[in-house]
Length: 165
Length: 293
Image: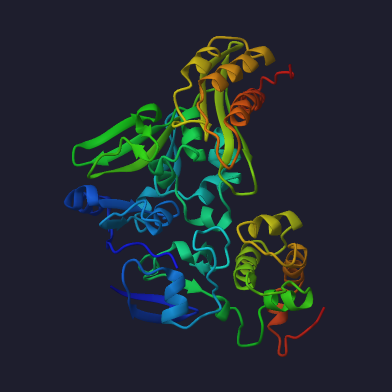
């Protein structure tokens, strides 16, 4: 079947089998390997992407189900003016070690901040509760999201949006 | 890598279109919405439909509204929408209790109430909730529209009353004046399936319990059918002793099995204790708090 999915602002068309999973479409067909593939059972959350702006586990979405919809992956986080504040926050607060969960974590953080620019510690923990990290103990991920909340998009969209904490 | 076996896929453009596809492919066809129960089963070949009818575009099935004295929830309503609905939380806080502990936010963004009920997993939370609040499933097919009470909708593990060529379109919950409801779940870790869980709903009318309902998850083949415990409540004055008695009967009538989540004895203990707690909290919410025994 032919699908056209808007990925990171660009319409991408491909011929896929109905059983083709969205995570495979992104990784294998488009070469967007920033979306990681983990448990394949919608438990670990490393495959989280934004579907029409909301976090979903792409191992449990068929590519054909995303036909005509918008998908945002970690490759689409960085803007013309530099890193997304969430990305910068992960750098500033050492929000990752091995990096396996990081793309999904950052997309969830972006979706959270888009809806709730000033989340509490508890709201951040709830938002990422469907995603596993075995390195950080989550503390630095929460701090990274808090850093991003303190440095909203507008402010960091300035040229050379580097380390400003 | 887990990939489902091959199947045909149709995206339904209307409820009528969906029903026509289901009719045409008969037993080979399955409805897909959130897909978070069906796709994992297809990956494992525990389910192998020849056709998936995608109903995600049928926004006419995505609503929560009050019609007369019934709360009406469209089958395509996502877990997240139930959790965020002020109306649902006000009328039936039991739904919010349960939704907070169903899976996790990305899964709740996709999964639907209709899919949860049609999956008919004995450990699934919303089936127990719907049993407790005496929900009625509205099933649509070539033969017309049927209203099916939860006790008849749930036929057994992974089996419902929805027939070939039919689909669940709505869940209707009778709003009982003076009612309260609550859900209590014990799980190994955040977002896991229940080790055991209990839902309870009741109203207090003229100082006595009316319309009691109990549904249990993960402690037997069915979340419904706790009639003896319900009968022990009806017409009685709410008290710690009455609730403890209902819990004791529910524990007696459930049928848990030992597995990796716990022993049958532990789950039976939980069934009684959680039923009692859910009843106490439901009574509190109905404006009739009961002191602990």
